[in-house]
Length: 408
Image (cartoon, rainbow, N blue to C red):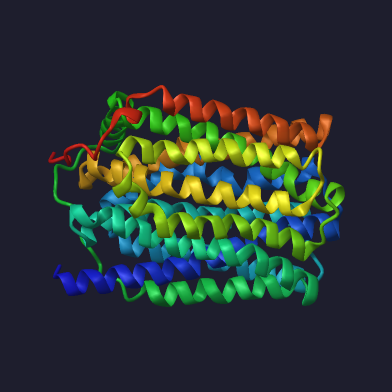
């Protein structure tokens, strides 16, 4: 692929990522708001919805990762986004017809998340086929910038749409954006599967799992992300009820505070490559986990001083630091793992990391039901402290630069 065609393909992937992520974020933000406003859901019900929306990461990441290494990754992106578009269309129809229920929100959230899994596995696995190794960090930052813009605008837009135009309009907007992503994905070239020996599926999975488990750098990165995701979903189970009932925020104000997460991500995406150039690589990786600790402490402060602006600052910090983590650790994984098995290895990471989210959602639901939102906020803060200590005690912290690229 020529430099010009690679740049064009990366631009197309970035714009489609923006549209797809915007659709997802509008929907994800609208679902709990609708559940609280229309169905009077509490922390327990919100935690169960979060579990349903994240369960596909646990169940489908590995199969879709194998498919990404055996099929065209650009076609997998299109198929995955098509599944998400259908789920959003169904949500729009049910809300518009007044037939929405917690069961329907959970089921369609599961279906939409299945599309998200396919998109999330295929996109980073496609990047090494589009750009040379020295440009991967910048390409990852560009994709994350598009995702960050969606995280910034999506929740705020969802809150405003639900408040001023009704929940149906929020899901209609998400459906249109998902359809736009589909049209853009049609312009991606059909990059063939990477050359290499074709093992049996189980042998390939064992090979990919061994790469992660035996690597002294990838293993602590994986476990750090597992704990982070558990803690994040515990916090998410509590936040909307906490914000609306304790902080006294309206639906659009809740959307604004959630949108500050995306605003922080935008800052992190813009600064990620600069941070990685200015700091030793290991220090850049550690920046995200420790900023999460600071963000969790700020959220705990809302238990003493119930002000919405503190929640907004907390979400901005949660977005900025972990975004640098995402860019740096994705680049590390793309460097250490051969391209021909990158889809499976990415899927293994997605399974154990994002697959931890249903457990976090269920834990948040249990703790929220028994002891309320305050207990969830405190438990989440303890989890964020643990994940920072895990990576800080690993060999990752000693890295001065990226290690040598994998050749086999």
